[in-house]
Image 1 (cartoon, helix red, strand yellow):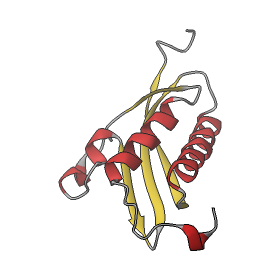
Image 2 (cartoon, helix red, strand yellow):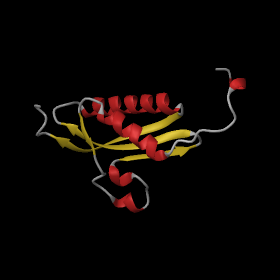
Image 3 (cartoon, rainbow, N blue to C red):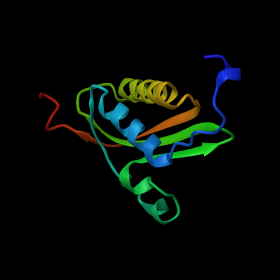
Length: 117
């Protein structure tokens, strides 16, 4: 649809929606057991969304994200983190059409009990 046929108006997307998209995309990556609150919760009083493991902000029309994970033991943490970055960025770009500034991954714990599962 050409731009000159678009109806007037804007579409806004809540950061809560962006958080939900990022959370679901991260949980869909093999090796991610859960999204978890940061173990170091010092900033929880100052930063919205840090307490539940996913923090998304918008700066200069770019999405910036911090995702705190528990990963499955026995896997390459760096590869799992890179896969999460790729999938979260892809999901956000496809669903809301915004550019991604960065997606930082923080591994808060490793679940060795599920390593063989």
